[in-house]
Image (cartoon, rainbow, N blue to C red; front, side, top):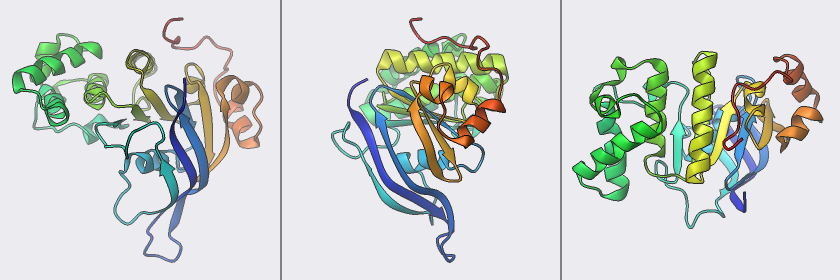
Length: 265
């Protein structure tokens, strides 16, 4: 890891800004995202972790009010969503077009960002489907989302998210709808992809045990505030905040062997 990819200072986001004060989703967040790291953002539902991801990627809904600043010292310019930032949503059905074949959706991303011919874009898309370990990538290229399982659809969504070779990959609760075995396989895949391609991973989850098995750092959110951040070993072994301790004691025994192992280990 080297250098800062993104720097967040005094970030606040509220929804329903037309109302007096609105609904605060993030409050005065200061955070740095280090280039090449795996940063896990942990918190219960409503803690603000997904709002942080949407703010970083420029996907906040119309009407949301944002104050503070997000700068990108690790990029030459402001990030281009879909090009510099790849996003994997919790539900792949939210990002996959149900009436377009899986492969064509990925090929469109490649053509738009790199100006490839359809033939070259198709070849690249099939290679990506192989990289995310989908069986018979050529057949999957021609398939439609409804013809795949939930885990396969999520792998296809990952392929689309990395198609433009982004610097930052955001996985927003991308494993929470999957069973534990498929979840572990997908996390292992994400870990390998970011390692191979030199990407930075922002992994958003409520599962501190899962995050602890591969994240370099953990950032803990509560009620829209960043309450603790630090190296995973320190946050797990010597948590500084009562809320973090509560997350730990309410979860599985962290001494249990992890479901995944880090790339190269």
